[in-house]
Amino acid sequence: SLARCMVRAGMTVLEVGIPYMDTRYQAAELALLTKTCKEMGKPLPRIVEKPDNYMQVQRIKEMKPDLAITGMAHANPLEARGINTKWSVEFTFQQIHGFTNVRDLFELVTRPLRRNKSLPEEWQTFVKDGAPAKKLEA
Image (cartoon, rainbow, N blue to C red):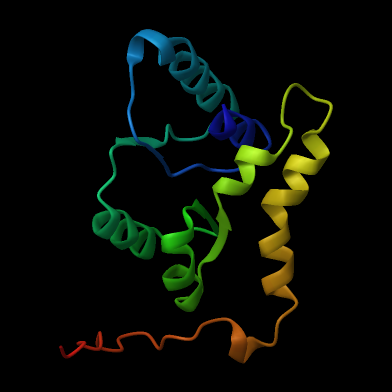
């Protein structure tokens, strides 16, 4: 439902990672997401069940989204590459039931975009494009 809300607000959601999908319980939400994407003229996001961490980070780096809502483990490597992130765990504690707190929800989503836009240009990325990965020696 978070993806559907973001699409309804005008965002393009590229991918949704979910640990487990039981379509018996999530079929109605998937149908609403499909309907919302059609109504808003947005592409249907890729739904990835049990996402492989390495491949997910690689896809994010290739897609270069404006914002990645991701786990804490992915946030620092993505931020270092100039991709804005928001920790997904913060949505667990966000009161997003109904329309009452929708302003707070969008404040939460847009905060990293506004924060990083206010930083000096040289702070936008900490990893140079094409920089080789450093091998750790044991």
